[in-house]
Image (cartoon, one colour):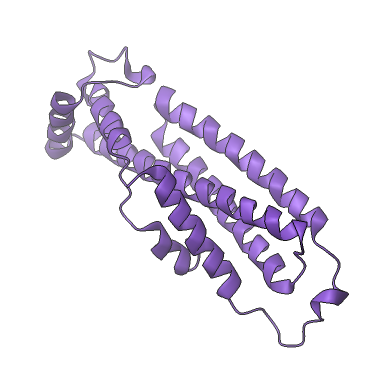
Length: 200
């Protein structure tokens, strides 16, 4: 399944989760009495753009730096903030403050946030795998080192940060893990399930 198709599925599930959730309180004012959410949509647009920039930066670091634990933590932050922005968009939707042009903008924003959540989740899983295997190898795990060696045999490409580490097999073997995970785009849990179960 392609990344684009998976993102579309996630966007659809996210949209359904946002619109079907029950609004808080039963005595809300009529939508016509509420001001449009233009300013808040602008803020969410800016937040999505900033998160996209942060995500690209962490993706570059994942390719060029050997700081998998730190990168994992920053990717989790990006994912969680994107989920929070989606939840805020949902509250605006349910309040009736998105009208006409605002509705169209919000649908585009839903797709952007879905793509952010999907990519951040995917790369968090990759960073987590690398951080775990790196730590196990440092601790002398024979299984981790054997896995590294096997993956080197399958796919010997190395990220830039490990290109000079050929004399350090514990770190150099990380190359194949990263490359193989990238090539397969492994995603262990269905995005739509995560969205339906509380946007996580």
